[in-house]
Image 1 (cartoon, rainbow, N blue to C red):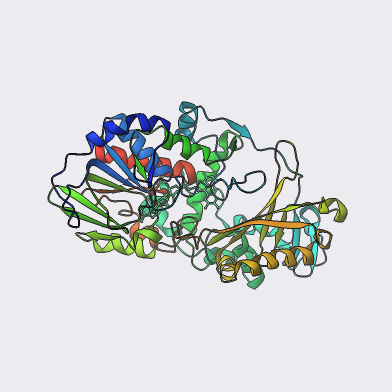
Image 2 (cartoon, rainbow, N blue to C red):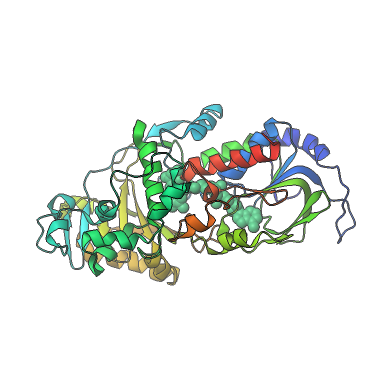
Length: 475
Ligand SMILES: Cc1cc2nc3c(=O)[nH]c(=O)nc-3n(C[C@H](O)[C@H](O)[C@H](O)COP(=O)(O)OP(=O)(O)OC[C@H]3O[C@@H](n4cnc5c(N)ncnc54)[C@H](O)[C@@H]3O)c2cc1C
């Protein structure tokens, strides 16, 4: 058996059937002369969008091959099973309105639960001083101008966003009328008396590189989706970690999933597509569903070429740089300094969230660095990153000195299978690419969260897997 194959229980039994279904070979491999295995559909990427597309196609009797470049399934769903309390490095919150996710969870007998609660409140560090969110408004070191002083730094952007949200429906962001908002978010900061301080604060929690390079329309869309997702109550988590979802989906497929198969070339030849991987292996299919992020897709050669505008979208739509890190504390330093364990800081470590487990109110700390600070942090060697986290924590929270252990640092930007946390829109890009950003190209159909219309995150990925599968099925 090929070591690259991921063959869990049910698949082991059915693998023979699949091999039969996939043997209708007309083309042959140039290197070996052996016939290429042919499938109805090849899915590129075993993240949620790819696994869901494969699941739906299989339900309709199609033969499917899933090719995945990394050593695991799940993509941006990534439970760190080797870190205490098994935190998630990627997607973890399942919204109450995640219809597809909830339906799959229920079909596969996966358990959801409420997030266990951690201590409330937030410490806010600005420069050399630290306070609490409740005292921020009156704090002597609060650098904001008088009308803004009462707004916590992470909520400043919301104050600059048109309210109520002008997007009536989840897909209103694609309507012509909405294009007037497809301008830099920075334009709206003028209402806040835009200055370097507000910009710096907004950039810390911004889901983009800077307020000048992010579209207000993209942010309105996110806010509209968020409003919908929260409309029925708080998000939940997957018991045992979010990776249990893609793992169960993979286990439940009949189709083979080949790991460590980095697709480099998709070529249409006659009535079939020939897929080439970095190791020289080739596979053939009638249809292709390509779920890889644009950051990676731009390096896959597609023949015949994509229309110019679509290729431009792939090359230019940016991804949020993000790095996450995890540490534990041997003692509750937050009880010694009297500040909440969760913290916002304008230093390079940006945001620290205290995560609870079922038996501990603070089981582990999750750090999240976004945008330009993530790029700066990523330039450091691992040992320097660890030291930076410890030094910054010691500077801001002296009571933590000598008590912290850093367990893991994961850069989504440096991770070669994603090269970024998620796609966002630059000013003007929705107007330019909104009508074509997930158009099929001959027999290639595009999926992945970056191609979602109505939802975002986990549900967005599933929405696109479903759309691409339906496109292939012609329904
Ligand atoms: C830090 C972080 C926190 C998040 N939190 C949440 C949350 O709480 N709730 C929520 O709803 N969403 C959240 N998300 C978003 C959610 O995780 C993603 O939207 C979703 O998992 C994306 O799925 P996907 O299938 O579109 O892409 P991916 O999961 O990225 O799947 C693409 C797959 O393609 C593979 N691949 C790449 N290149 C190739 C190639 N050349 N050949 C073959 N395979 C290739 C990749 O390895 C990957 O497995 C978060 C994301 C991040 C990064």
